[in-house]
Image 1 (spheres, helix red, strand yellow):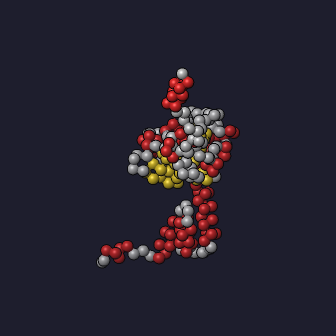
Image 2: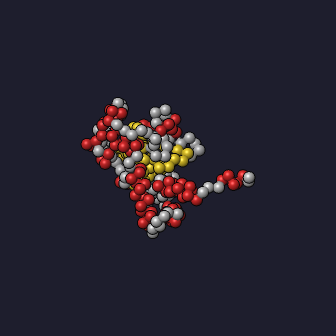
Image 3: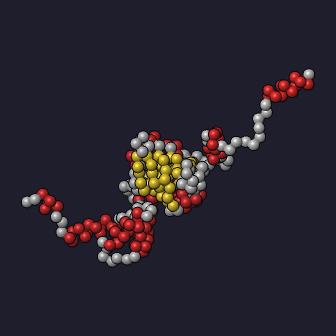
Length: 249
């Protein structure tokens, strides 16, 4: 028998497999998501318009992400330790309202993508109920035995006093270092219970400074001086002043 014949699959088995894949599919962000939605819609038993199908997949993805065990753990953890006002996860700082060069007090986010940068650090694509944002995760977080093993796609991170930056506005990024991380709940964590949450140690929360430094002004001072607009005032010529004083004498 030819080797390739062992790879033959019955049509009903293949269709069953595709349906299972479709039920857990997420759309690729951006225009590529439209092509993906069209392809998934074509193989479905009940084809719909691409826009309708994309909206249904996006809604299913939203419900799956924010009904996961990791997200439920974050909700109960915040409520038990009263990390934000009224212990309500809706009172955290949302990614959708973040501004460049701003310090965010408490952030709860789901990791949608992890990309190592080859230098030991990692680029993340984060998401909460209001929007998404890219982040730079430092290698000390990955090597930390408490947090590192749990970081991956589908995990939920609780961050404190984390700073945003923007090299090319309006794109905003989070700069995550070890001191920013309060807790990380792995994607495959068990369902939370009141008893399990109660035994977790109370985290140390750094208060948000009332008057944070103006990072935008600091960055402006670090620009190349040759690219700055020259001042209209001319510097005083000390040599001319000396000559004038000598003449008067």
